Length: 215
Image 1 (tube, rainbow, N blue to C red):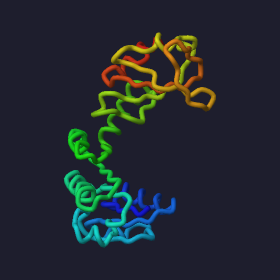
Image 2: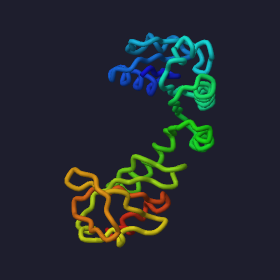
Image 3: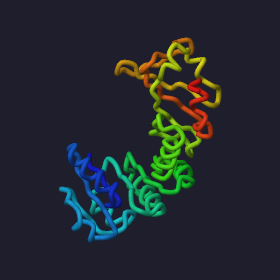
Image 4: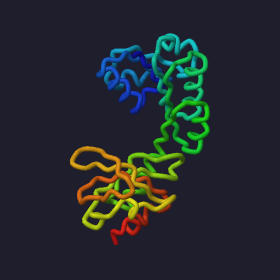
């Protein structure tokens, strides 16, 4: 697949090198020509200009691209570039990085998947601060619900799923047991050492241990 990347900052460079390492072709666009001389070069084409400029995108091979990633340092530039790639060039897969989590939900309405680094980082940091033993790698919506990973200790061993879950507050999504992920029914029991994946309302994260009967 040919992938065009708008922005050659840390994220853009990482994507470019990883995609090429996996056998894809890449072209990158950045408004600063100097960045291409400061870092390890990629095999693909490097173009100086705006990621949403029509002529620059054509030079980058947008017309044959299977995907486009807008990862510049500006939210407006990213969404404009993403919309140009999707609506003018009909690129089948378009993604954008958005810093402002409030904008991310709006831009999702255009049918463009977005990643908000601020939302993800803030949600995960909050979880680490309030419940160090729980790990959060995903937030739903605007971060109202978090997906937490937590190892079941002796306090949870033998409890049924229905004894752990709380409607609209906490739900057991999946369990990893002996290296395999499984789905449990309400009457199945949790075993010590299970790695639980829980959907939890963000406002209740600080009460997580109490909710799970661990205090």
